[in-house]
Image 1 (cartoon, helix red, strand yellow):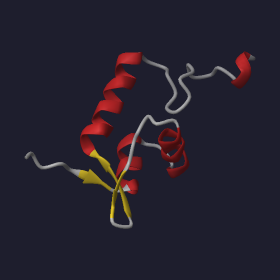
Image 2: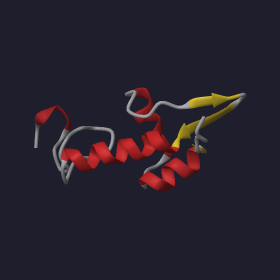
Image 3: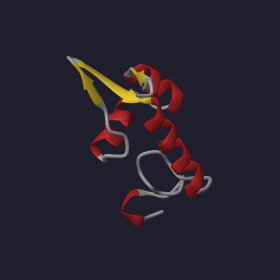
Image 4: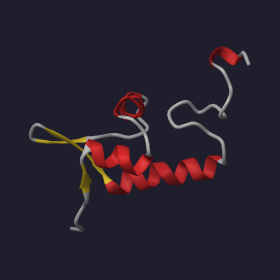
Length: 78
């Protein structure tokens, strides 16, 4: 069995450069799935790395947690 690295919420936020609320939004959208260790919430480092890779594959200018290009308004209005 390989050793899984588990990250705390502040570590994941720092890695992604996002606020805690954005991480919660990603969790709600099932883009990052946490694991529970007793009463603690952790994220697999491999899952965070895969999420970053998916953003890189999506191309430049995609906002984290929205799927919209930067600068585009909600509801399609500019």
